[in-house]
Length: 107
Length: 417
Image (tube, rainbow over all chains, first blue to last red; front, top):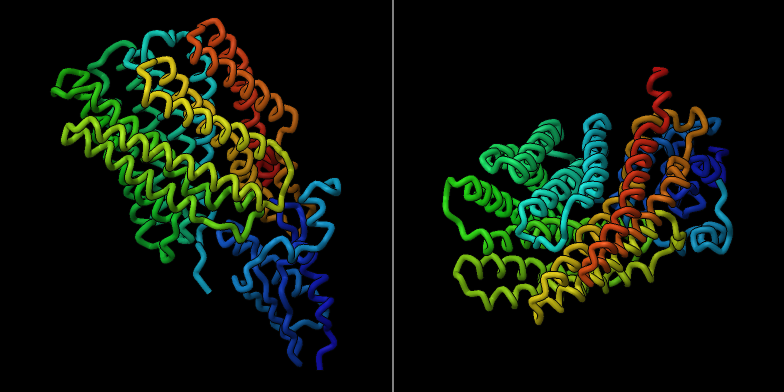
């Protein structure tokens, strides 16, 4: 039995920033799911804001490394999917507000 | 799942010269405007020489450098052989300088400069076509890269033949083929490339999703049809077809502007940063240029032709290129110098790498100068034109300085290694 919770995985992915927009992947709504099996092997299901993202491979590598830091984790795999296609409604409210200029940007 | 490029970012040292040389040509090109007399007409050798300095040294140099990074991004495949880009900038640089020498002082030198430019472009074309062969998804952007490069191939062959004619080697109706050369380069290559790339880049930077793409598809078909018809009309000698071709191209631009409006309306990122402001001026200038272009269908006024060309090249193309430099250069520098440090130490975000004040000065001086000079051309007032060029020169100086700032950002990190 594995004691790692999905929330811990999401918290780990929130340490990975998108340098172009300045928000982390979790608050951008790019992390769709985390599948954890009994041996604590984790599969992160995520997407990117565009298929043409030039940092595609680096971002998936950073997610993998961030999740591997969780104590007791087994193998980590990251799968990038394009269905459902990401859109801004998937982002957290404060991200939407900052992008729309309702809230001031944070550095 | 579809495959994604394995080589999205080419070596920084390969692309850096394109941007640095392009920015120097840009600054000097704006400065050289003081030595031109707009009343001389567009067949004047000084004006033709300046046009080649600006289009080859700045526009093509920056586009080729940007394509080294953008081709894998938009085609979703790696380069066929990215090392070929090491040949492109030296031959384009030397060829452009020789062509300037030819236009200004010695026409006999023109074919030599033309040959070097031809070589640089052929290398670019071979690399691009071989990369295109690997593309798995045939999107509108892929098609635009394909067609624009076919038009560029024809344009440079015609340009080379014209350089032979100017040096006395062969006979060619220069005024007829100059028009075809300009349409192939500006409409067939530059505008079609911008139409294709902007369908990836503008939604990517604005975070726009789920918009209808019918307008841009119409725009693409009409631009390809219009440019092809213009070429055909010159070959068969039916001048009335040229008007039809021009109408098709203007309608194409109308659809394109409408598509950009749709993307703008659906964007999530509403910040009016230096990139967004540059796009506003760029697309505003394209609208002005299109209206003036339509007027030229009914008027013989050379002032209107010059003003339309000014707003197209110095407004639309220049502001789109400069705006994208504020996105592309920080990304390449960040990728080279900071991406290895992610997870180990705090790294800057891309917007932290912009020269805030310099970029603002660059934008305002350039936008004001470009507008005043364009109006000066339209009303035939040289004093107004040179007044606008004065502002534009200051703006170009800030652009050169901004490019240097961005290219040098974090250089000390690399020196530490």
